[in-house]
Image (tube, rainbow, N blue to C red; front, side, top):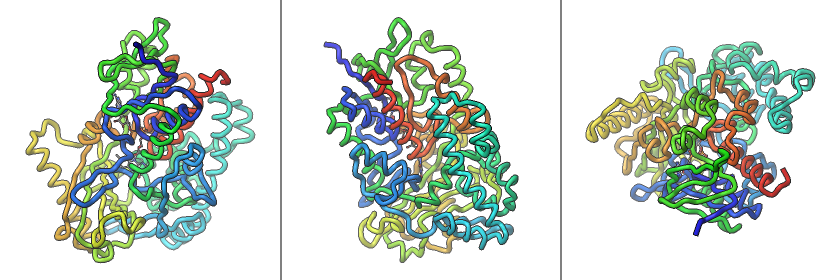
Length: 506
Ligand SMILES: Cc1cc2nc3c(=O)[nH]c(=O)nc-3n(C[C@H](O)[C@H](O)[C@H](O)COP(=O)(O)OP(=O)(O)OC[C@H]3O[C@@H](n4cnc5c(N)ncnc54)[C@H](O)[C@@H]3O)c2cc1C
């Protein structure tokens, strides 16, 4: 007998989980299909020896607390999911630029604390830095209005009521910072976070960056107590509690369409599964490759083909046989850069441009067994930066060389001894992420958010960009771009939107 659902969600990454939790909670017959044997996509964990590693999350923004919830905290609350949140109470970040023009700066959380630490690093910059940060509430008001009009805002309202948004939205981070009079050194320090969005700040849309910076600054960085796997499991609980089905080891290999071009369902494990609506957490390029080409509107194919894939990362996970106090690492997040300029960091990315060092024990002391600690190194690189056609033994050597180079550099830069303490080591590259997530070129950030494909253009084009009836998208590749919070929020929005439509009150 044919299996029929109200909603099929393809992919149990953050976006898919939030979407499915919403449709199940709304009483819709929901099926979530995931190719792996565990949920979460990037949001998971893995074990080596006696260590359970966080594979992706450095810090989650826009979470907030029980007393002062922000969007992500509220989203989990509203769904009835109860992860245990931990917060980084020390500095927001430490930024080290090596070499002659170098600096070693720690930035504090909170708007005033952040401005104070910027003033200490670059005297005289405080006022301009604060003006940049305070654009955020104005940009929020404008985007809320645009969302409320379903991407069809009144031009006059935008010009008269959302003037700062109109001035800012089309510009890069550095253009807006320069216009506000932020000195170059202060810009470079403030722009340390570019790696989290994968686009250098002379190209990255100002609005997008302000959103993220403000989220970290105001709420501080949050982490789930039991790795990001805990977040994924808490949403699986919601789906199942409301009668939703979750099928693991169920890779979708085909999308099915009705004669009128609307989506009919999918094929997983060789079985045809039908639904009134399908939500894809899988990037459009892959969905179109799993669909008969004649049903995909030409404009949709052109759009998918014109978009640039976002950056990926190489990562090194270390389990050490000493505590973080013995190691001598007091900061949770350290950015280490070969040059002060984000564009140069981006251009030299595969060669010491920028890397991030995290020690989770600084936020969650018991996140590894007693007497140990873990370290997590991340270098933003593209899939294309990995040498081509490596034989298995050459790939192993590539990973070992990469690990050795960055561990030695961190030892020298931070003045700590890491090598003799390594008990477990694991190295991932864009190849790992391509295999694990199924993304083209191993992108972990969907499409590159820049140029004509920036955040503003995506929000404005949401209604028309992908117009296949019954098929919605959610995840890092969709309108809000990458990152945990963006993926949860867009999954939540799409799940609610589909539920409303199917229940007839759209
Ligand atoms: C190393 C690393 C560090 C990161 N650091 C941060 C950070 O500090 N802060 C932050 O906010 N973000 C960070 N991110 C980014 C963040 O993890 C992602 O942007 C976000 O998790 C993407 O969620 P998504 O909804 O797009 O789903 P994805 O994580 O891309 O998951 C998609 C899911 O779909 C499944 N799937 C794919 N194809 C199929 C198919 N055909 N059938 C069935 N299932 C399928 C996959 O198995 C996967 O489970 C990091 C990512 C990585 C890898």
